[in-house]
Amino acid sequence: MTTKRILVTGAGGQIGTELVTALRSRYGDANVVATDIQPLPAAIREAGPTARLDVTQADALAELVRRCDIDTIYHMAAILSATGEEKPRLAWNVNIGGLYNVLEVARELGVRRIYNPSSIAAFGPETPKVDTPQETVLRPTTMYGVTKVAGEMLGAYYHRRYGLDVRGIRYPGVISSETLPGGGTTDYAVEIFYEAIRHRRYTCFVRADTVLPMIYMPDCIRATLMLMEADAERLIHAAEYNLASLSFSAGELAAAIARHIPDFVCEYRPDFRQQIADSWPQTIDDSAARMEWGWQPEYDLDGMVADMLAKLTPRLAG
Ligand code: AKB
Image (cartoon, rainbow, N blue to C red):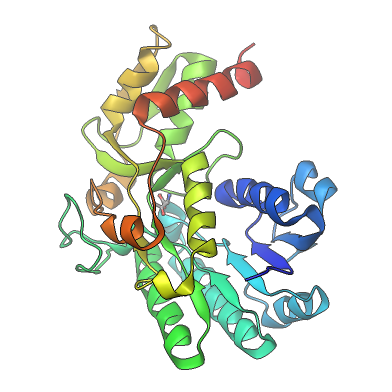
């Protein structure tokens, strides 16, 4: 497929900002329209086309897709798990209303390929926690998880019914050095770096023994582009790939950081997010992604920690 024009929703978010940069360097700055409901960072605004977009407004989305002749949408706009528990109605409206608009506009205007990310939040307490299989129990206990399962099914429906090419990954927690995550349960795995560098202390909102699947942003972006560029004939699952990269406890992460910052102290004061974390898997079986589109992670825990500290320290210290 030769991509003509790409639209990214949620382009100012943690994944969106780095995805836009990667897409622009691959397909050309002018061919990637970055959109968000919030003002976008200057680096994104200055490098290529941007627009303000509320994904719950179908007419505005349709107008943009038509005007910019879009043929591929990366739909990254979403309310994450912790905010979703505080504002369940907002999570439903943005995550399901927004996705429905994207799929409908795509169907009506001939957009050829959609990226619709899912999450480990699609799993729930009844799902096997270790080596969580590709095909398994999807009974989440968060509103965010409910929208992710419904979103996977909606994508599959549009594929079956209208032949839309909808693809997606069940993202683990994403760790990155450029844009802070917002409103997720896995946010502690990013915040800890900022606090370790700035204050040598962090109070973590999950227990030290909480193990969750995580991924470092360079691997996350690479996986996303690999899936979107894979031959459609090779994809059996398409809209809901399990993806594994790193799995570690909060205590192991703190210890890995302390190997670089010996006076770093991490305390643990679990809040409501502990219950969300406890409902998710610890390790993921991603053999479908490996077999169908050649997925292979590059970063291990120590490699990720070293790279995060090398990038953040000069920016934050002092
Ligand atoms: C969250 O914590 O809500 C997200 C996710 C795992 O999808 N990072």
